[in-house]
Length: 165
Image (cartoon, rainbow, N blue to C red; front, side, top):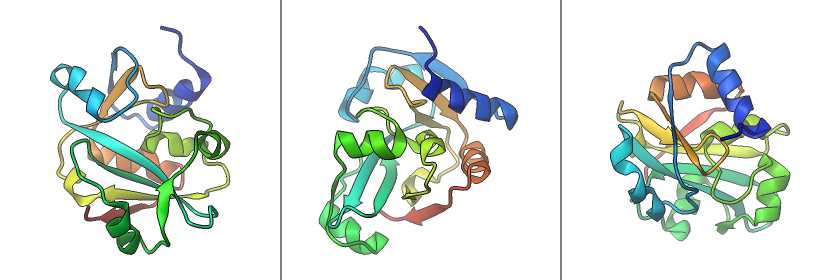
């Protein structure tokens, strides 16, 4: 498959940092539930990524948790110090991260040029197992270690805020 510019940015950064990763091509996936189609083809944890906004629409959050985690937006708002939360619209996702729905992930924070997004990582993901994320497209999966994800995020100026979901 063709490598799109949004995807290439991720690989270029991983390569520049000397990070080891593997890539799996698959049918496009749009929801965490659809991950079941490929779970047996990769090692490690699969993650769900929620791109949210506060009630005013002036703050954005990316919350990454295990794909099977139950996330209650009413409870999580207090844990992250926000007002009422809702999912950001596809238009907001495109404006802030340059992505279409189904593609958001921690790698996509490389596109957050204005540093508008606060990143939260569920403590249940921080187990030392390998992690799986889309590389800004929903038809490929990148497997990476937690330490290397931290290295990637640090290199693009993103702080990991641990949270218990």
